[in-house]
Structures are given as structure tokens and as C-alpha cells.
Length: 148
Image 1 (cartoon, helix red, strand yellow):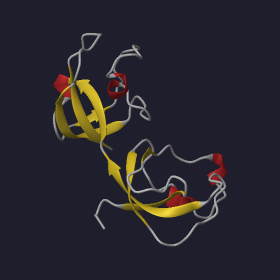
Image 2: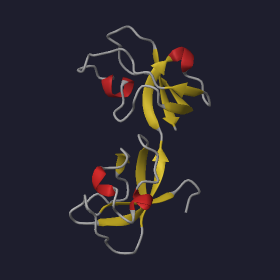
Image 3: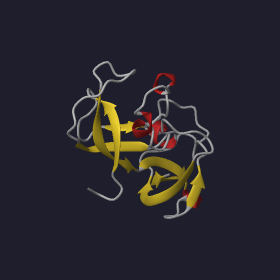
Image 4: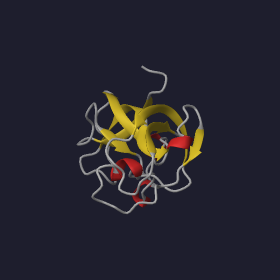
């Protein structure tokens, strides 16, 4: 098992190696569950990929109608576009969404990734390169991979 691998519980219908998800945090229905510490040990807003399934059967869950099972996950980098001057590998950044409301832009989801909030803190894991396509707002952005 990789050292960055974590164990969590996920709905059995979602438990497939390679499935990626963004952890959104606790739901009200989770509070009385005795297993919620296992499910809720991930970083809120981080993206994860299932790398393995654990044997142990299905457990009952207040949210997932088919129950949950144990899986191995790794946190995966979030790909986003940021200002070129801030794109330095290893640097720490505070997420500020690009001021853009052009939903039809091919880069909109990269410039404003889902699951993130203004003020989230990240470390730039890798500078991938230039953002593909033309920015309709005229921003000069770099494509980076970030982790919490």
C-alpha cells in the first residue's frame, strides 16, 4: 500500500477502482453513525481516486441505500488555471477564482474548478504549462496541479 493511501467508506454503487470524487464533508444523516470517523477522515474539498477495494463486506449506511464498503483512496491533484506570476512549483497559494462568468469558455472548468471555495489553501505540486485555447477575458494563465 502506498504511504499516501487512506482507507474510507464509500457507497457500494460507487466503489470501483479508478472512480474519482471530491469529498464534500459531513451530511446531517452521518452524525449519529458509529462509523462516521472512517468516512469523514478525508480533507473537505479535496479530490480522491479509488485505488483498491477492501474485503470486509457491506455495511449499512443512512445515506447509501445499498450500503457502504471499505476502499483505498489517494488524494489526486486538482488541475486549475492561475495567474502566470503565481505558478511556481512548491509555492503555497490561496485560491481566488478567476473573475470570469463566460460559462461557454472551453477553459471555464479549469479556471473555476468545482468543489473549491475562495480562501482554500493549496501547494502547487506541478506546473503543467500554458492554458490551452484563447482566454476570452485576455488573462495569461498557467495550468497547475495543486494539493491541499
